[in-house]
Amino acid sequence: MSADHSRFDIAKRVFDVAASGGSLIMTAPLQIGVAAVVLATHGRPVLFRQKRPGKDGKIFELIKFRTMHASDDKKITDEERLTPVGRFLRSTSLDELPTLWNVFKGDMSLVGPRPLLVDYLEHYSSKQARRHEVRPGVTGLAQVRGRNKISWEERFRYDIEYVDQRSFLLDLRILFQTVRAVAQREGISQDGHATMTPFNGS
Image (tube, rainbow, N blue to C red; front, side):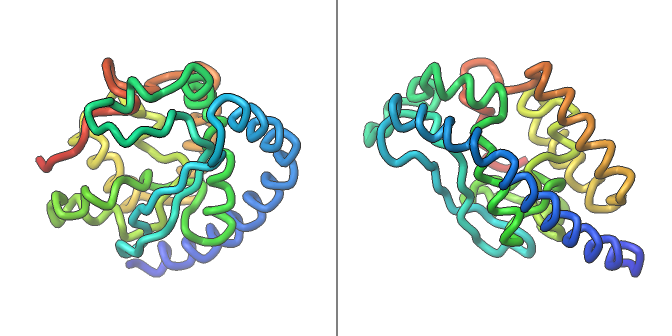
């Protein structure tokens, strides 16, 4: 890691704590409202919790609002389990609001490669695994360049590009472009999938 990247990562962590802490306070009424809707339509639990790999591959628990009906039937796809309310929450990214707590705790950053499934770790090439050199992000370069519509190869290429070129200016650009992408509801999912096809290696 270069000295510039080291200094940037320290400053970024300070910004993440301040921004996520302030956002958690400001969005509290909205999050309470969303939680009430999820409880009424999906029942308990309100929050979706899942283990994800973070910086250096360290496992943490990602939290979001639940968007699917619970089911033990493995024949039912995520697309089939996704509810109308859940689809709306995903299209507006309201399901991501609790993830601000992950940022505040230090599991994640506002900007970085999206945290993927633990199962994918064994499928990464050494180059693809470099995405774990930084904290995963609520949004990232891949999210503003196609989100779930792009291929896995493109996603990983953007992740590594971010790792190598990360800067305060790039983070600001990604955050502004994320607001536009969310407003326009771009790249929410691939056809026939709740998000995108599973990654089984390149």
